[in-house]
Length: 82
Image 1 (cartoon, rainbow, N blue to C red):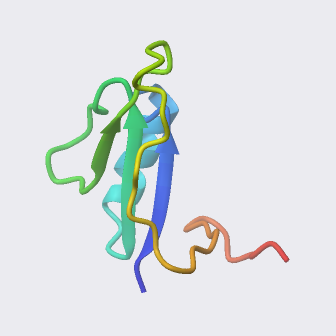
Image 2 (cartoon, rainbow, N blue to C red):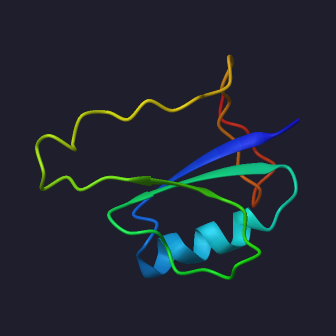
């Protein structure tokens, strides 16, 4: 089952590292959201959504294709919140 992770601030240091880590995992769909695409290795799989919150026209919520029943999960933890 494919899991989806939205990473906001993906062009920053921590965001790009998260994109790099999750984008190499086979069961993850990574959506990176930031003004600019993150600088990561060419073999990292992710989708980029460009968004600049300083531009009111661009700040409208993007339309993303989310799974029918999204669940919150983390590849770094086996705990699921109740």
